[in-house]
Length: 117
Image 1 (cartoon, rainbow, N blue to C red):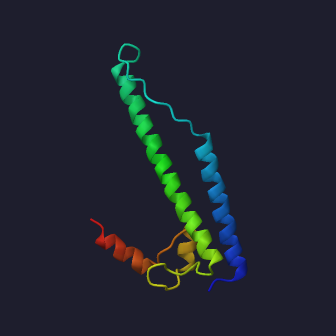
Image 2 (image 1 turned 30 degrees about the horizontal axis):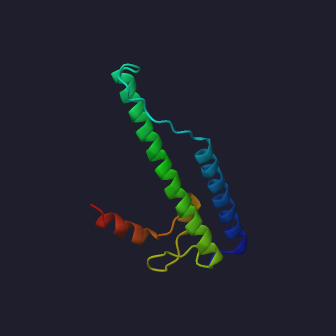
Image 3 (image 1 turned 90 degrees about the vertical axis):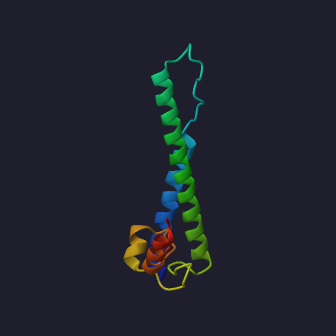
C-alpha cells in the first residue's frame, strides 16, 4: 500500500497530465481535406490527407491516455491504486513513477506482450 503523500503526488501528476491532454484536444482544429483536383494539386492533397491521418491518430492516442488516467484516478478513489488490475500484486514504485496511469505489474505486462501477435 502506498503512503498518502505518495498517492497525492501521483494524483497531482495524473491531474496535470489530464489537464494538458484536454488542452491539446481543445486547441486542435480539424478540417476536411479538399478533394477538388482543380483547386489543389495531387501532392498537396496527399500531404493534407497524411496530416489528417496523423492528427486523427494523435487524437486517438490522447483519448486512450485520458481513459487510462481516468481509470487510475478511479482506482485511487476505490483504494486500489498501485495494485495490478490483473493479478492484484503490488506494482513496483519505479513503474508507477515512469507512468502513474499504469495498471499492470511487470509480470502481467510481459505476459500480455507475449500473447499479442
